[in-house]
Image 1 (cartoon, rainbow, N blue to C red):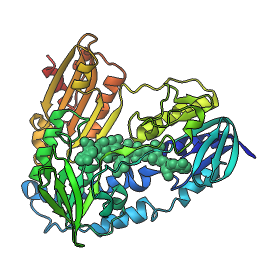
Image 2: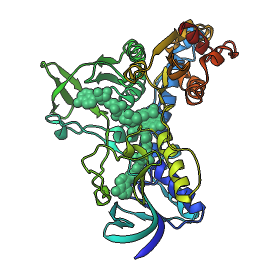
Image 3: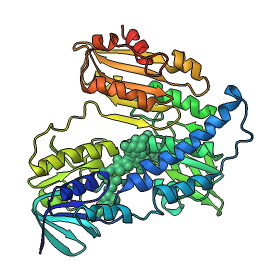
Image 4: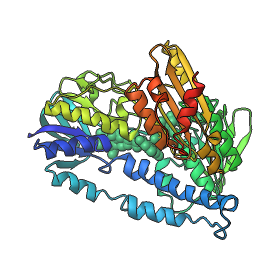
Length: 453
Ligand SMILES: Cc1cc2nc3c(=O)[nH]c(=O)nc-3n(C[C@H](O)[C@H](O)[C@H](O)COP(=O)(O)OP(=O)(O)OC[C@H]3O[C@@H](n4cnc5c(N)ncnc54)[C@H](O)[C@@H]3O)c2cc1C
Ligand SMILES: NC(=O)c1ccc[n+]([C@@H]2O[C@H](COP(=O)([O-])OP(=O)(O)OC[C@H]3O[C@@H](n4cnc5c(N)ncnc54)[C@H](O)[C@@H]3O)[C@@H](O)[C@H]2O)c1
């Protein structure tokens, strides 16, 4: 049986970081990947979708020219430019040779196939068993969760994979799910001329964010011609000939489109990767981990699988802790108090820490302060595209921020300052005494602090 110090099952952003760093540090590392080294983020997630968004935002800015600077002629979207960039620049036509070689050049051993834990200190890849002396790291990520809707499996629906790989766009699209994926892709495709309807089962878009941000985004979407149906339950789905998908809502209304994109969340698979062999309940939705990402003696987990936030930065952050664990190096334990997230719609919605509702549920003495992005000097100067808000959530007893939202142009960048405030528990009095450069978008933080009272 071949022996390694560390085996990493799943080479997405978290697994690749653990495996590559430990190999570089001289450990014997086995990396196991059944798809592409790099995982969801570079091939079907963050990177190509942000490339799409960059293109869609350029179109939106061009359309704003008339209100700001005249005209650059007729704006004519061409998806083939985006598809080519994704194929050639982002994904190498979904070929991971460069990433695989980067790992093996560091001294790692890559085995392609489906890995699973065969027992303590043992992993198996498609029938071959390997001995692991120091640690097994499970980083198998997530896949699209497909809801059990009558008829769905009979229509050729899209997931994020198909949307990212599309060489041509449909004329019309129903997007099932108004979360981060649904909202980002809906706006991109609408800006490229696709007639888009979002069908969201809950009562608002981006349910994990502040309700005011959800409402502001809904208004932007409707103004851009995206139909938003919230509180809408799908009864069944069927194909009408070859041309259209019909989405039948409870109540009987029918929505027709050339394509259906399913973006209803992600699912993890705890059982498939053999975590049951080390005592994990395989019916769990996420792997239970402690604050050092330990699952069982000699087993760690990182990334989407841990249920701590399905973001690349969470996976990389956790990977950093596991690397220290496996190298026996000191360092802080995981702390998710200041977890940031950014939905890259236009306007961007950046948020960190707790929402107001979460802070109240936690029993804190909550105070909030808010300001409209459009009412700041910079927002007003910016003009078209200046929708948004800055909302602060404070723990009044301790005099610190526990959460914040920055929605607006560059909302994800404005968020940086708020992340520091929440993470480092900067006293609100200290935030009030800072100098905020004029006229920046982040200066809106000062207005929101004033509103905190
Ligand atoms: C459309 C979209 C847009 C996104 N945009 C952003 C964004 O802007 N910012 C952000 O932070 N996050 C974004 N995300 C989320 C981000 O992509 C994920 O959180 C991140 O990729 C998770 O990393 P991971 O390490 O858990 O593994 P994953 O990226 O999920 O990769 C896991 C890997 O494990 C492999 N694998 C699974 N099971 C096995 C097995 N048994 N044996 C061998 N290999 C296995 C898979 O093939 C895969 O390559 C986006 C996601 C999507 C879908
Ligand atoms: N910018 C980013 O960082 C970014 C971008 C995209 C995705 N992501 C990550 O990927 C995760 C998955 O994204 P997602 O948008 O698929 O999931 P999500 O959980 O964010 O949103 C899914 C939405 O689908 C709705 N839904 C579920 N079943 C439904 C049904 N049958 N009919 C109608 N609506 C239904 C839910 O109510 C929810 O609002 C995100 O939570 C996020 O962590 C991050």
